[in-house]
Image (cartoon, rainbow, N blue to C red):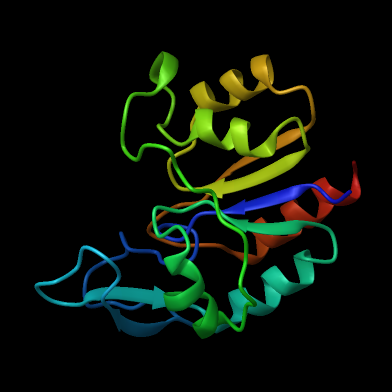
Length: 167
């Protein structure tokens, strides 16, 4: 069984914290209205090359959305990247309580992984999350921080491939 690759959208795929009005090189601008955005559309920057990179990693991983977009990532994000519909983590509670100063997603990522090896790309993981996972998850795990001002880079894709190949 392949390890999971848990994919956050905002930060890794959409470098939302890059300087406003300065789209990062290689990215295209999209206006989206996911659930909750009724006033004006949300600006999302996506790099079409990330789709090819993720599809290449699908040889090593089972790809899963781990984003607050939940299943809407399949409608709004995946098509722009050339991705098929992916399973997603259906967060029991978003932005709620988190144990020991961890990111609110971390406890639910462990529940979703259910003892399977996983890599997780997110702009909110910290050393506290790594320690929490190390203490509570019986399989290998890679928590890869991605700078929300930059998004995924070639170095990230290489590190994810090396990690999975080393299992």
